[in-house]
Image (cartoon, rainbow, N blue to C red; front, side, top):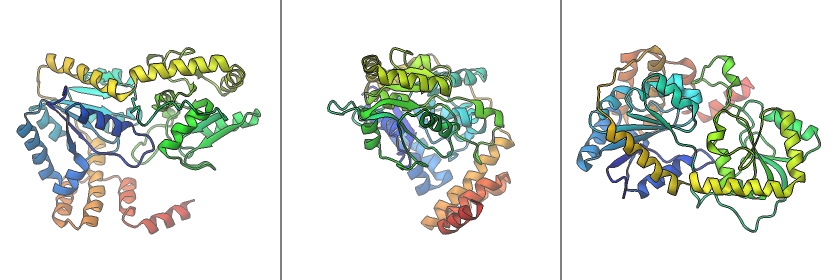
Length: 401
């Protein structure tokens, strides 16, 4: 068991269609890692006692490495808690969507990490500017969930699977394809076909001649009050590897660094404009042999590099390389009102959960943190409180729409 002295501080995710975080978690556990469910334990023990519980697990099991894999909008723990952990173990943080949450959350927690693992190439340089070691680990998936179906017939010319509501330019791209007389099937929230299951998504990738991937970022939200210029950003999507593992041909919008993940025009095909996208759709619909060759090459690369049973052990070896040469130095912490506002506002979300559980002592513990910091984001606070009253939340959405 190559990670027997490791712990992973994470939680199983049930809200999302893809299996990326859960796949990592299962594979770390297979390699001997101790699993600590931070969400379950936090709701059980509360803020102070969960920290003591985690520290006790580390001491009892003589753990050497702790990997923090959390949702990009989670603020369960203070930065100071990770500073305390760093004195005991080699701290690692695995993060996704850092394109959006770098300035809001990620860089603050990264101050207490010996190593940060990101899913793209550009973010590792951003962390490097702050003197924080970072490596790229591209989205990898479980071959038992994503696989090539030998009997699948290519009955769909072009398809896209994804959220059509809050992602930039997706509707524009799809409408342009339709305008050019090309048949395209769209699945996901905000489409006539609706959201599909993971199993259905894999089947769609297998049955589609040309699988589309767009790299536009999400529109702004209450936690991501970015300047409008950031809507120009492009983001590395894990969907490329999902499609390739399923044996599908990938036509992806370009994003810087995509060349590090797959070889362009040999394993995947890219486009930069909607006109180029349509031209390449027409070309590869007519050239089946070339299309299937590229799809097969992409599948071979995905199985080799982006399947968790091989990718996670390689990642553990990289972590060990950094750990073996790391010299502990106390972290110099920089915390400001920007971070503290969101950390404190997250206490409202925890209060809502503790009210549901009837844990009044833990409610007052969270209130104590709020009163100490005295910083709240109004939009996020309202959002968390409305989760207590789903009918009122639906009514408010109806009124605003």
